[in-house]
Image (cartoon, rainbow, N blue to C red):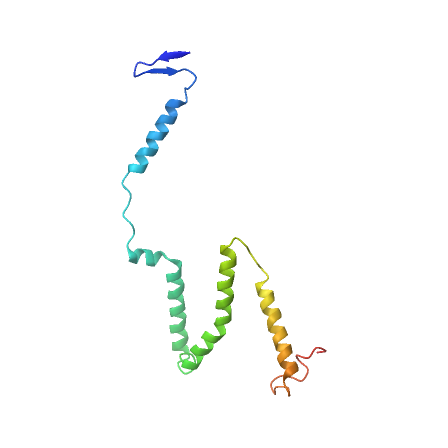
Length: 144
């Protein structure tokens, strides 16, 4: 069942959707060749990045606490302690990043961290010759 279309060659009557497919293909071709906006500049990319705003908030917090406690907060000792204390979290977060990237998820990291901390505290307490003065006797002992 072939009919002659006035605009061109013979077209099968069973392929009535072919015309709409051709129009859709033509529309996609027009969209692909449409002018695209220029890439955003480096400054606009930086301002729209979430990490930029997080860093800005961190700097604002450092500034506020430095103004509120100028003798205690902006000291070398304090920044050393901050770096030392956050090192463990940094290592854990890098490890979790690799786990998430490989399409796995492990929610036990926090509990393993706490468990390891408790085991090491008990081991240090058991191996120490005397109890520290600031720790009540038996606070970390197995029976306490």
